[in-house]
Image (cartoon, helix red, strand yellow):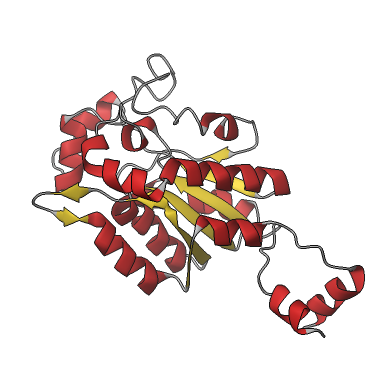
Length: 240
């Protein structure tokens, strides 16, 4: 087998068993209209987070990969919780990700809980699997793991917000549940807080502990895109 084919074979993702997952691709954490913007603005703009998520969505849709979204919503009854961690206390106090009802979209459009406008066409195309909401940071409280297994997914390419909270929490649980993990390092961003510290720094460190594939959007797009391989070379790849 030629060196070019040896190098080519392991790079492409299998669209039958690989999916993209985005946590919280929502106004609240990715636009200037969101409550988190003062804390995430610098990292979102530096990483070009929204643009990179859009590029990944576009490529995934073009080449037939499944896309999953794990959203963040709070309903009126959630505000009756008896205690909070520091971040959820801030989110509840500022009514972030708020929806009026689990069964109604009244007031949803344009709210902090709504999708980022640039991403909306991909999320609402009738093919993206939008899971039930996670209530804190990980997917233990929603149906993400079930959905991934029902679709035969083995490898997850992960991006979204916030890098050091929901993205990292999802990454940890996915590993515990036996999934392979790829992290899109520039399709996410973390907050900077005067007292709590820089979430981008902690995420950058922990991502490398959690995944051997911490890749840029460009690198992921290259591996999502089918390479021009002849039938003979394709067969050789399968026999490796």
